[in-house]
Length: 224
Image 1 (cartoon, rainbow, N blue to C red):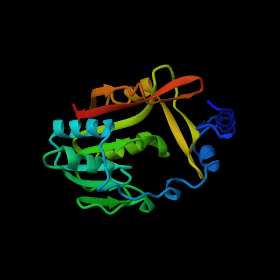
Image 2: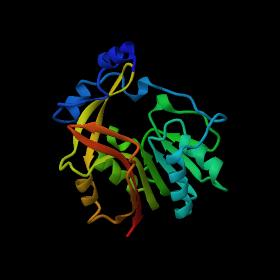
Image 3: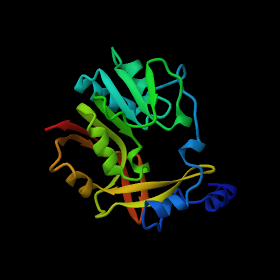
Image 4: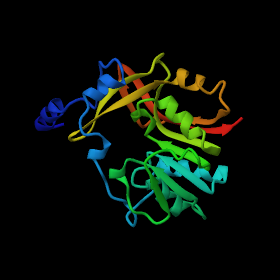
């Protein structure tokens, strides 16, 4: 690394800032939020990634004809399904209004539609950014008929507790971000109507917080 690159790296804030007791404390140190970083759809210029193929594999396994995508952003997962699956499901995305895109075949909503059932619910890299992750998970599970797919979930096998940080996500955007104990997360499903049918660890995608390595993992939940 060049001297200039080394100096720039030292001046940059850490990706995750620690030392916050709860979500409210982290929120008070936040700036902008996701609404401050809107984006446009990549429809017409899109190449599916590994996570997209994982999602498509799970949807094909479930045989999903309707999908709720919590925190689905610009619709990348739908675009992957439209490219990969013979028949893409009807797709609804829960997202803040500033991040709604215009995509044929996609419906955007601001809140979880609790009176509607979907064959599958997916959420990728979103649960760690909400105030109450477990309450949100319960809400999305309540509208799923056949399966729930979670990806990019920061889990650690060597942490006993969940804790919150402030993530420097983009220039001018600082947001609260949770990290989860893998043991506590799995325990939630011991008495749940959902079981962990498939779980994987994203070894190439991780973050080191509190001296411990957290891997962005995934799991497929199926009814018991």
